[in-house]
Image (cartoon, rainbow, N blue to C red; front, side, top):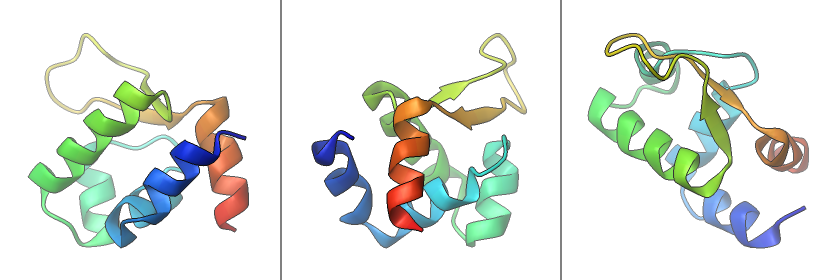
Length: 82
């Protein structure tokens, strides 16, 4: 468990909600609807998560409707959040 990444996630209620919504792979639009956040906020958070290795993009070549999923690190953080 990377405690620094865990701390990064729990410092923001929106980041926590976005991570929790990724129990199953989703698009930014689906996540935004689920957590009641703007698409720009969701996209910015997803980019941060990808950069930190918390999630990965399953469809990186798509311009619209990219699907994101948790990495092993993300799954570890999710287990601690539950």
